[in-house]
Image (spheres, rainbow, N blue to C red):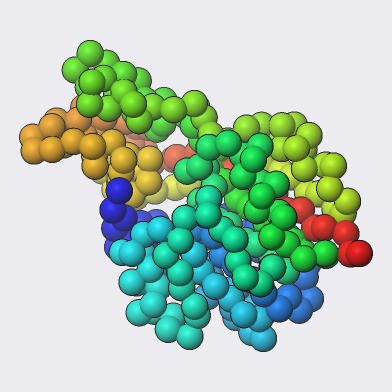
Length: 257
């Protein structure tokens, strides 16, 4: 699946705000080694580098399109094309930061402990994940992919919600010695555009579905989805759309030895 950096940045302010909220809860004074997992175009990675300007900061992503933009915009930072599932750095981290990436991966009961094992004592695991999978923007997409017309081509892309509830993550992570902070926030995003939620999902949830289609099917599927979205998220009088979007946050600070 290819990523379009320009389209992803259409709503930069709304996408950046959760990353800043997560960053604000990381209390490390002077980490030496930082990894940004799922760094995309490197906007957030650059903020990590500016806040801790003596740290070695590495951005990791599987999209060459995103990494090309990151290298162009932030040449002083190290960028690696690597799957998060294979993350096994030579130097263990003081901070593993991941903004809106881990929800693309399954099996968090195995993934999270493995990532945390790459932290040094006193290190921090800071994660933000979209948790909007039961919202109309997502449920309508999954329902449409499961209809008779589209199931053979798209049914395999419908998966159970990859993000669990807060209690599930607490049970998984509370066994670690240290401080655990978990919370969820719903952002009532005011978006501009005729079908703003469609534009939002084009660069995220909708992408794998369109990538699995060819020719006229791409336009037909998107049009059917767009019509359903406009019913679920009607335009306000001023032409804006309110798009509630929930996100789950985790900050685990390991105890010092």
